[in-house]
Each structure stands twice: as structure tokens, then as C-alpha cells.
Amino acid sequence: MRLIIVSVDWIHIKTILAGSLGLLLAWKMASKFRKHKHRREWDSVGKDVVLLHQFVRGKTCPNLSPYALKVECFLRLANIQYKVDTKTPFGPRHKCPWITINGDDLGDSEFILDELSRRFNVDLNSPLDTQKTACLEALRVLADEHLFWCIMTWRYWLDGCRSILSTQDFGSFMNFMFPKFMVLGMKQRSQQHGIGLYTPEEIYQICRKDCDTLAAVLGEDDFFGGEEPCRTDCSVFGQLAQLMWNAPGTRYQALVTEVYPSLSRYCLRMKKKIYPDWTDLLLPSKEPSN
Ligand SMILES: N[C@@H](CCC(=O)N[C@@H](CS)C(=O)NCC(=O)O)C(=O)O
Image (cartoon, rainbow, N blue to C red; front, side):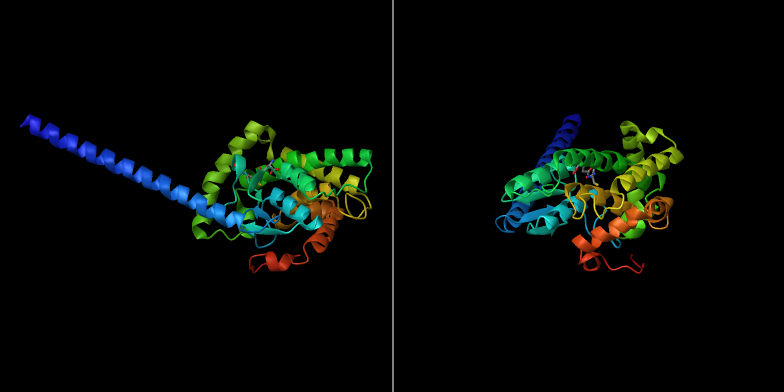
């Protein structure tokens, strides 16, 4: 009798193992097939056409990722033909944005701008002298690597994702789930980074100081590049646009609209110059947009 039970159990185990293996194989084949399908789609955009992989458009600003806006601004300023994919926003290093060009996948906004400048022989900083270019590179680092952390720490942790959800259209399931993993995730990441060890007031003051610096460097100029936007403008605009359009009714938005109004005028100037189709790009919204 005991022997029969043992052999029946063994049959069960074998069936379960075979089933799991079958499922694993099917899943692997499906993901391989999906990758091939994506690859075919990505490579079909045409020679020298950039495919920009990024998050879906928002209701008040074309993207919630400052780096996606940065790359898109660059593509537009450099007159590089591009298309947008929002189905696969995460690429190399699991970051957004990334691009595909002529079959090559490239990640990291700064590396992307370097590579596109090389391939298309464009230099948005060409009118600037070496010293000005170097100072603007320092400002770019302030925007991409410092201001970014203030904004993200506030947006996803301190603000509990409230403002950002009001400017996006994620659907009710994601509206419910998003804060559940983002708040804790951002808290951990910003604490590991260091900025999350400050109080909310200190983080606001750090953000304010960055805006103070940006406003001082901009001065009376139209753009950071002077009369025309340069490469740094893409980075700075990407970050400031998050305060201007993706933080409605908050003191973070007021940093550009009230404390440093020259920055909101700058954002509007960039919007007008680079995004004449801004409103068409946005998702339908009941909120009035600037
Ligand atoms: N240094 C990267 C940063 C990109 C980045 O951090 N993107 C964010 C979205 S704004 C992202 O993908 N975050 C997902 C994650 O870090 O897990 C760049 O310049 O592209």
C-alpha cells in the first residue's frame, strides 16, 4: 500500500515538473518572439530615423521624464528625424529614455546626445566659446544630477505621487498601485543617494538654491545658449518643465512661476520655440494648460 502512494506521488511530482518546464519554455519562446517582433518594428522606422523610446505623453507636459524631454528637444533643435515608441520605455540599464538608430540601441540621455552629435555632425554649442561651453556643462550637471534628485524625491516620496498622478493618465488601477511601490522605492533610493537624509524643508531649500543659480546664470538672456538654445538648454528645460507643468499648485511649481519668474518665462520661450505642437502632443485634459 505504501509503495503505491509513493509511486503516485512521484508521478505527480514528475507531472508538475514537466508542466513547469513546459510553461517556462513557452514563456521563454513568447518573450523571444516578442523581442523579434519589437526588433522588426524598431528597425522598420527607416535609415537615420531615430526611434525615441519614452513614457506615454502626459496631460500637461509631453513627458514626465526630464531626460526624455531633453532628448526630444535635442532631436528637434538638431532637425533629426524621429519617431516615438511608448510600448518599451525602459532600455539599456533599465532606464528611460533610450533610442534605436539604424539597428543600434543607445541608452543614457547624455551618451545619446554625444552619439547623435557625432553621427549627424551637429554641434548645438558651436556658437559658444570654450569657456562658456565648460560653464554650461557644469550647469548641465547641476540640472541632470542635482536638481533632478530634488524633484524626484519630492514628486515620488514627499508628495506621495499626488501631483504627478494628476498630470498623467495611468488609469485607475495604476493610480491606486503606483504610489504603493513608488513612495517606498523612492524613499529608499533617495536615502541611498543622500538627498533623502535631509528634511522636506531642507530638500525644498536645496531645490530653491538650484533654481536661484539657474535664474542667475540665465540673467536677461533668452536661452542658456544666449539668443538661441544650446545643448544645455535641452537638459535644463527637461528638468524645469517638471516644476512648471508637472507640479500643479505646489510650492515646487511656485519656484519657477513666483520665486524665479524668469525661469517660467524661459520655459514658455522654449516651449514656443521647440514644441509648436505642444498642445497636440498632450493627452486630453480637463485642466487648463499654460
Ligand atoms: N542618466 C540617465 C538617467 C535616466 C533616468 O534616471 N530615467 C528615469 C526616468 S526619469 C528612469 O528610468 N528611472 C527608472 C529607474 O531608475 O529604475 C539619463 O540621462 O538618461
